[in-house]
Image 1: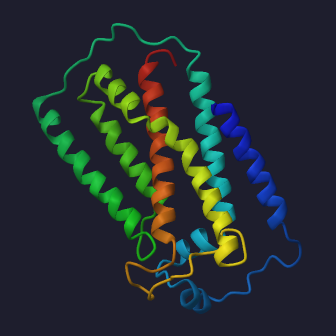
Image 2: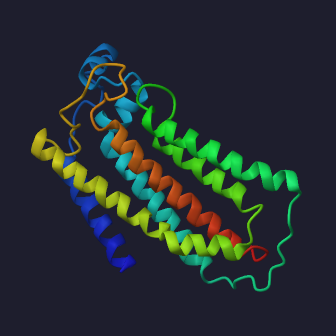
Length: 227
């Protein structure tokens, strides 16, 4: 099933590239003021990455997904650690780690929601949340981590997110006449609900990066001492 999903992602990506491939002058005709008025995102980088260069962003997400898939596949061939003796950290670390995890989770959420009006975005939010979970591994036995990993089925999210982004790109053809066209309801410049689909896309990218980061961390924990 995973191979079919990866093949479909590659096929759709290739077709999208062919459809949107244009030749000619690659210099942007937009000025900073025009981008601000048209996109309404206060963060100019967010406006470019999630709107004007969204096709590039999609391929970045796709490359990240394929990289995570490849690493996961080859790590599965390594023997798993059996009867690993979990050493408890000090009481201070055990108390502080869950608190830090909650604070970092809130910071990741803030980065997703406000990435288009300030610093942040989906990529940084995913890394922050993945790092927060890495801290949890210091105070939790591997059995508990494995139970959460399998129950949440988070590994499957990294395949689902690119498909949702592709569907979003196709919907842009409906409401804007072009693939990956920004959502028409843009909002007011500088406001939280501005930038069209910026929050939605940051959320998807954040999930993708978090799922990929956590998958790699989990694989390394499962095969610790074998690398």
